[in-house]
Length: 611
Image (tube, rainbow, N blue to C red):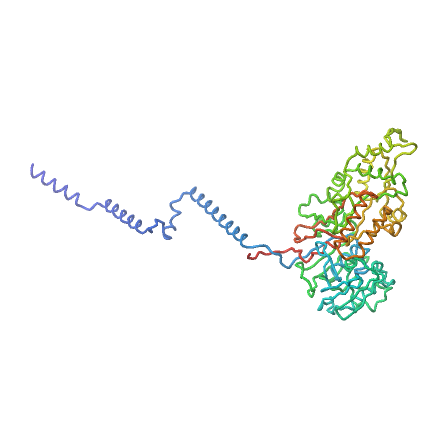
């Protein structure tokens, strides 16, 4: 028995001392685990060698989440970089790209001294030719082909020192001879220039190759502003007979000194020019434009031009009449630039045709009956500014003038106070209407208007307003082709709705001096006032701008007190342009061609540069 126990103990000892395969494997795995842990960095981050096995420990959902997080991180990183890029860079225009514009009509005489009767010719001439002076985008008069000038003390002699090294588009030099020749051509009756009247009596003298003196017979303050017309090249025009000036090919392929030069044009089968291309004049003495080509496309009517703008066949239109603006409302890619202009709309009274209008209180009552702000909003969609006197460039409205705000009750009271009683009458149609009567007279006014959608709508609203205070009003609509010859020239109207454009200089002499009461004068109200005449005459003979301003403000006071017309508003010039065209910054124009006064800064292409 003892021997048995001893033998069993020996056997058990040998069993436990014998190597166990399973245990050995566990010990080896433990070793490898400790070795792997020891290979981790001090920051406990896995090494690149370890990361390549990372996907083996992720399930499918984990992998999807990881990919999403990584994508968000990448996007955030890109946005951060983009934001930083935008903060440290700025967008600047660069050269390149074209601009195309639609115009109504077609070019005939692209000649700066013949173009005044055609807006298309004026637009092209403005870009191709340069003048002694020009207006900038703010309507400030500045030198162009002139380096400097002096005006004599008696304001009769103007001496211009011309820029040197200026070249014509054919590389010939520009000199004083060209200026003298151009003025002589304007004054030549055979040339038939519309500018002849304003330069009548002006003597042009060449002092040397780059100095010209212009001499006036009497002082004339607006003279400098008249010298913005383009100069012709004598070396190309001197051999052309003035009587044939309108027949030469130079009127289609002109040569000037302006910032743009003729490139090409296309005609239709009937020989009418349908498109006209200009390219930059790389020898121009001023700043170079960003655009590399200007393309003008010509249309017979506004609907065709509008369709071209809608379809992006053109980038802009020379002008957008108010009646067509609704056609473009859905086009969000268009800027509608509203530009101020020296043009006012008014109701001019002819007191000789209707003696009732000679009474001041009747004209005042008619003015009080009109809500100008409402008329502007409803008829012109607010595209303008209400006025109370003829606004003048650089002057605007004198704040001290007498104003007639909307007050129909005061208008009715004014009429009743002077014996005009509201009476019920029966019309030929058997309808009853209210009309003012005084003894055997009925208070009636005939309102004449040109056949144009906005003006006829305005006339109807004015008729309704006047009839609400008891003034029987009839509206005479005249075809626009006949309004000048049949109505205005003979002053054949009682009250006339019409627009007047003062022009580049604030001088209103032609529109309000009593010497202009009859054709071809433009005093549509047939207004006569001795003090007003004296103010207008004095303003023309001084170059002292402060004095001129004071004369004009006093003139506006007289006009507002005498009320020869009811001044309604200055309508803005609407210029539609595709939003891809950048850089337009003109706030005021005197003529449509002035919209190009800052064309050098228009651009289509950009790049980003470091700040």
